[in-house]
Image 1 (cartoon, rainbow, N blue to C red):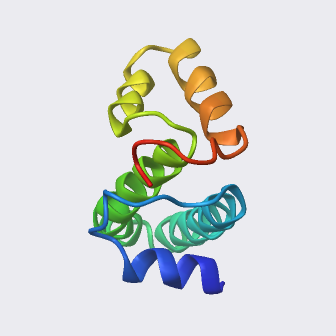
Image 2 (cartoon, rainbow, N blue to C red):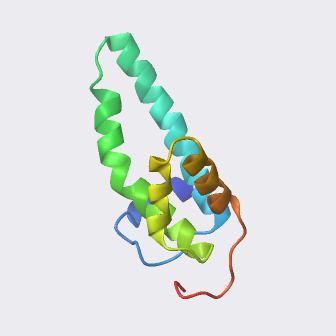
Length: 107
């Protein structure tokens, strides 16, 4: 939970780096909360709670992914791979799961 809150606190930081553990713990809580808001929406019969959650979390999600890509020595623009159906998402997950690159231009 600390990783999730720390990532939210640095939601506008696109320049630094995020370790593998911090990023994946953030993603775990992001997905769990997304599922929870989806359940609330289905119980209420509206699509309001999950939509608001998704909009609020858009910038922190993009920032965290950019910092994680920086940690692997890649530019944050590699996130655009998600627009390539199936293969792009798989390649992006592969990049995000790799170990840190050590010293790189984004340090």
